[in-house]
Length: 277
Length: 180
Image 1 (cartoon, each protein chain N blue to C red):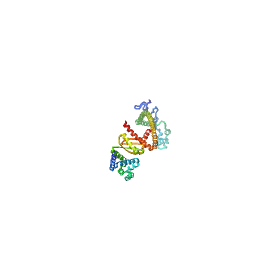
Image 2 (cartoon, each protein chain N blue to C red):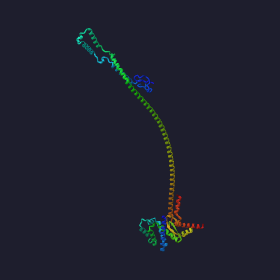
Image 3 (cartoon, rainbow over the protein chains, first blue to last red):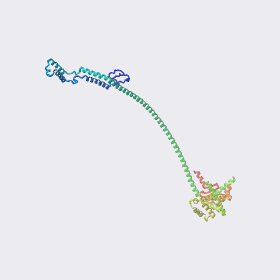
Image 4 (cartoon, rainbow over the protein chains, first blue to last red):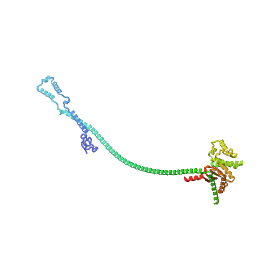
C-alpha cells in the first residue's frame, strides 16, 4: 500500500477517512500527478515573487546616480548658501563632499537588498504566509478534500456500476444460457413434432393409397361385372330379338292355329289331370 | 283414395251403360260392339290418347267417335260411347267397357275370360277354350277375344286376377331372363 501524501506538508501517512489505495494528488501507481506538482511549484513561485518584490534593491525603488548627485549638491548648497561658498570650502570638507558624491557613484548590491527592505519584505512575507496559512491553505485543503471525496464517490459509483454491469452480464449470460437451452428444447420438440407429423402424414398417405387402391379395385370389379352384365343383357336382347324375328317370320296362320289349339289342349289337359289327380 | 274414387266412378258408368243396354233390348249386341271398340282402343294408343286428351275440344272427340261407330254399330252403342267421351272420361273408356262386360256376365252367373292372341281366334276355338277353362277351373266363362300382336303367338287368358300365359312372348321373356 502506497502512503498517502497530504498536500502542503501535511505529513506522510494514511489520512483518516481516506480509502486505502487512493492517494490524494498521487496516481494509483505511486507517482505524483503532474497537476499537483505544477500547483505546488506555482505556489512556491508566488511566494518567492512576493518576497523578491518586497525586498527590492534601492536602485529598483527609483533612486538614480544623477539624482543622488543633485541631492548631495543641493544639500551642500543649502548648507553653505551658494555653489561658490561650497567651492570655497576647506579641503577636508570638500573631501567629505567628494566622498558623498563617490557614494552616489557606487552601484547597489543586486543580491542583498538594503536592511530595511529585508525587514519590510520579511514582514510582508510573514504576514502573507500567515494569511495564506490561516485562509488559503484550509480552502485549498477543503477543495482538495472535496475533490478527493468526489473522486472517491466517482470510484465507488464506478465500482458499483461495474458490479452492476457484472451482475447484469451474469444475468444476461444466464438468460442467454436459458434461452439457448429453451431454444434447443424448442428445436428438439419441433423436430419431434415434425417427425411425428411426417410419420402421420406418411401413414395417412399410405392408408389413403391403400383405400384408393381398394376402391379402384372394387370399382374395376364392379365395372367389370357391370360390363359383363351389360354384355350378357345385350347378348340376350340380341339373341331374343333375333329369336323373335325368326319366330315372327316363321309363325304363319297354321302355326298360330296350332299354337292356340295346343294351348287349349294344355288348359283342358290341366283340368283333366286336376280332376283325375 | 284416387284409385278408389276412380273404381267407384268406373263402376257407376258400367252400371249405367249396362242399364241402358238392357233398356234398349240389345244387350248382347251392345256388349259385343263395346268389346270390339275397346279392343280397337287397346290396339291404338293414338286413338286412346286423342279421346282422353282434355286439350282437344269435346265436339271434335265426339265427332271422332261418331265417325268410328256411325253406321257400323247400334245407335245405342254409339250413344253410350259418346256419353262417356262427352263426359271427359275417354281415358277410362276401356276400363268402363270391361267393367260393363264383367257385370253383364256376372248377371248371367258367368265370368269373363279375356283371351289375347296375335291372331283372332275362331268361334270353335272360343267354345273349346271355354269348355277347357270350365273343365280346369269349374268356371263358366264368356270369352272376350282381344287381338294383341305383342303376344307374338299362342294365347294369354285372364280371368279376374288369374292369368294363364301360353304365349310365345312369355317364352321369349323366359329365354331372355335365362340368358341375362
